[in-house]
Length: 277
Image 1 (cartoon, rainbow, N blue to C red):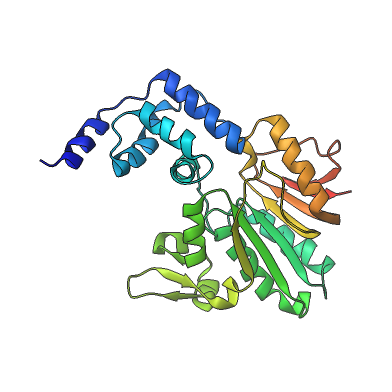
Image 2 (cartoon, rainbow, N blue to C red; image 1 turned 135 degrees about the horizontal axis):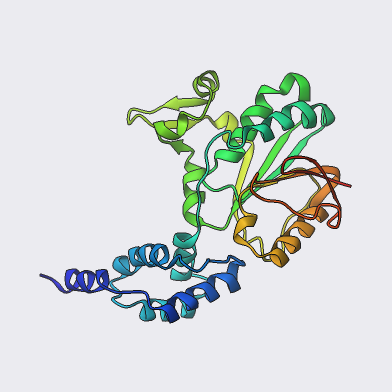
């Protein structure tokens, strides 16, 4: 057996000690504001083990020494990628998309569209928005459409930029829209059309850092992201969203998320839908 295989065997038996788990929590919170709850030791151990095997590092302490030396580049970014949860699907929380079509579309008729999907994961949310905007051209008119889509994870952004999804993922797309905007590949996957991807610009962004963006946006969607931050960090991010929204612009959070809308300069119009005052 070669040395690399022996190292893999040793690393597979490594156990994440409590002090190391607390160290992981501190590092990811300091960088990205993300709170990893107590009781997630097994999950963190499993995810970090993948990187340790890839690098041939047998102990968690050694791995954490490495990522702290490389912050915020190199292996540190892979550390962030594996600890970031990125679960989403097309047309997720569909009432939000109904609201966009029924309320927002008539209000932006004839205007250029500028939206932001903050925490876009593997691209399903901005693609859904782009499809609906293309379908709504008769209501919206012929203005330009620009959707900015950002996420912290490099890995999910790679998937988003490729625009290729499994048949399982594609099941969430209504069949008529799937046949219109996706091409089935010989491998049985579905690739989104350039007509849709040309509306989207993808980029990496840490929401806890200053936003290098220019507004104003009509719509910002940051759904199922706030649950990973404490209340103070949530409010700091929402204030930055408020600054980038046009007057009367809309902020969408996840259905399991909420905020003190009045204190932060918003009116709550529908579940997890807020309008800038």
